[in-house]
Amino acid sequence: MSMRTECKHFESRTYSNGDAMRRCRLDLAPDAPWRCPDACAKFDHRAVDIGWAHGTIVPTVTPAEPTSVKDGTAASVLSEAEAIINAMATDIAAEIKEKQNKKKKRKRK
Image (cartoon, rainbow, N blue to C red; front, top):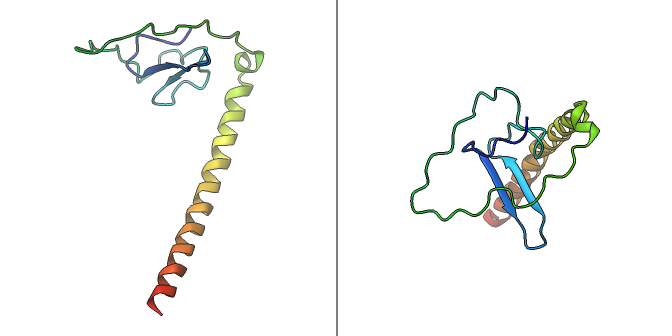
């Protein structure tokens, strides 16, 4: 299966250098830009967009799928990376809040 370009959650952008980005707006396609998951629960046909001017959905050829996507390695690596970033986000948010509190205390004095 490939990316479902007819899904309302599919998004594609082409940049001035010719590179293209293809993704699921709901982040439910870990194997993007090569394929959507089989029987995606959030698949929904794209509705008619009255008044919109549409270009071609996928103007460039999708790059060849690496073996890491076929064997599931890429999805597991991305999942681990996401967990690391989420863990860091909590620490960073706490640091920012602490700095803001210190600034407020200095202003009060």
